[in-house]
Image (tube, rainbow, N blue to C red):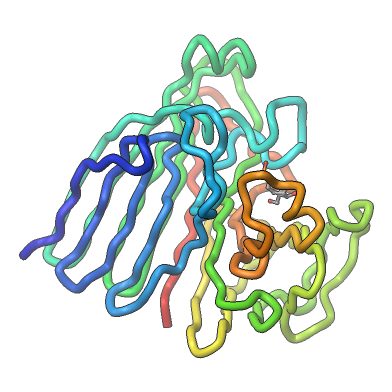
Length: 282
Ligand code: TA6
């Protein structure tokens, strides 16, 4: 059987279900172009999707891979994480091969987004599942007549068995902005990041691939075009304040996000930019 792409209903939201012959699976919601599930071939779910997530077509869905654009977090005057994670996208290309499935979702500015951010743009999210890997690419084109600048992220919620036992390697020696501690600039000096408390860091200029060790499962994480890596876990107290996360939700998630946060990306009229995150189950 070749790979398949089907339109499904996911908690009342239209979504695409991708499946390959070898057993890779993914679900991508049209609301926000948000990947909600990824199961690599021969493995188990690797993304964290909150059991208390809300699917009302206006609230951001807690978990999976939200697309943050044209603003990461609160780095500007727009709504937190921008304007496309809470809006419907349309399906563009759909392609399957012997062992891969690819979909592209597209968002073009609307009167509503223009009222908040007066720019002409097209954003495209391309998702490819193949064997043990998931590739996610965000492409942005300035279709207007004036330059604009933006920050962005693929806000990936990884599922971990127990966050305190997970180890994130590859960030040694990197400078980061610590959003959980008054935005202090620090330098990572440990061989690995271990999360044992609220963690909210923007690591700058990360050129190496990362490795997430989680019990007997490993995940390779690679980014291109996104210079920064955000590591986030709300821990107990902040988790309790988030209505769409169960009380122990923070124990089973670790966000490792491909981001362009420290410096805005500038696009002249007619120019495009692309950033990609690849996850590889090892
Ligand atoms: O990427 C980390 C972060 O910016 C955190 O500061 C945290 O607030 C998180 O995103 C989630 O944001 P959200 O608006 O989805 O609750």
